[in-house]
Amino acid sequence: MDKLEIIDKKIVSLQQLSPLINMWKFLGKKIVFTNGCFDLLHLGHIDYLAKAAALGNKLIIGLNTDSSVSRIKGPSRPITDQNSRAALLASLFFVDAVVLFDESTPADLISAITPDVLVKGADYTVEQIVGADIVLANGGEVKTIPFLDGYSTSSIERKIREQEN
Image (cartoon, rainbow, N blue to C red; front, side, top):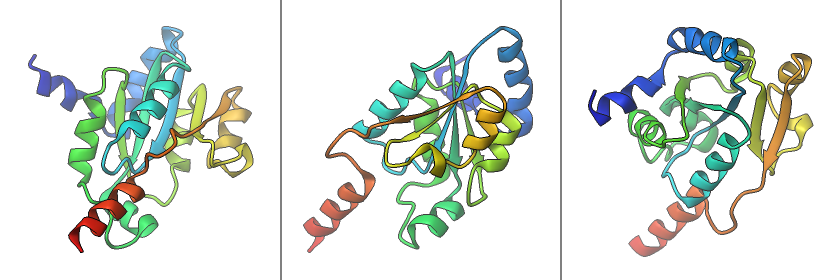
């Protein structure tokens, strides 16, 4: 199997993910879930995702589709299309699965996965995290991770726009 096939096999639908989750749970693996747009992958994302992965054995990323990103972030986003964003995330050795979702929130995805650990950035409180109630009701944990100062897609986008003028 070549390296691109390995990456492609990590980008899955929820239907493809279900048997993997069942196997991982049977094997006693601690499943971690996080979600986001991950537009213009940068050091802040890598730091956040590596710390999330360290909270368990298997990291699943729920990735907003292009249309979902546009609804959340505005018409100029995403900068990078969903296939590119998914492949970049899947290429990280500590990411086990990437699943796209088109809804406004990952609530349905979280309900289907029922991860052991739900992770979001520390700009959220546990009460604000979509799916926290689902994870906690199933005996899981909800964790927040501080962002790495100075790194954000918005700041990169701003810097590019300033250089254009």
